[in-house]
Length: 203
Image (cartoon, rainbow, N blue to C red; front, side, top):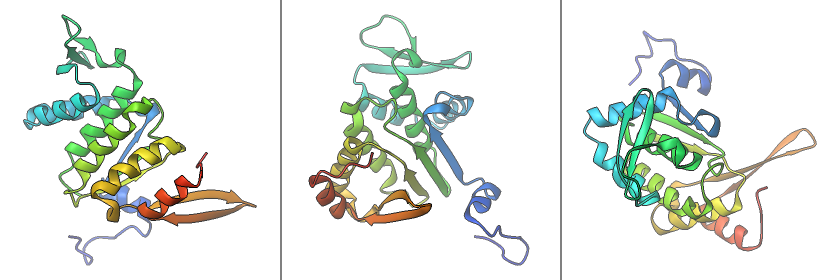
């Protein structure tokens, strides 16, 4: 709720997000940042560790525990006798951790931007990560999620997961520069499926 008489409301969307601290940006360059450490700490303190562990195990079933030490996240895996830095598992797991922790902690309106989600994510995990994102977003009206990608394979995996449960809560916008003018094409989940089947590639 905004008190229109006592507050000056920003005239553009970016200004609104900045003023009300409503924006979370996730990108391959920002993975494993100080913010991620803070999110993990919040998850542990809010007793949501088991929820996060459940989602991490969907991507890597061998993860059995995690903790924070000296500004680093460590995980325990079945194959090892000691905790190892999560960064040693691969960039994809770190990026997935950023995404999952951000979604778990949303308790007020947030716009979440995930930039080029396919970078660093192993292609066999596209569907798993898509299902996790959809599961965390589907019952949370506080999340407005935007994802950018150039990957046809990720779009296919994400859309297949959507078609099973949340196809009506999705829109794809394809953006292309044409003679210094931005060309925008909108697809519903069903239209995207049909278009992908014709061989269309977003790259």
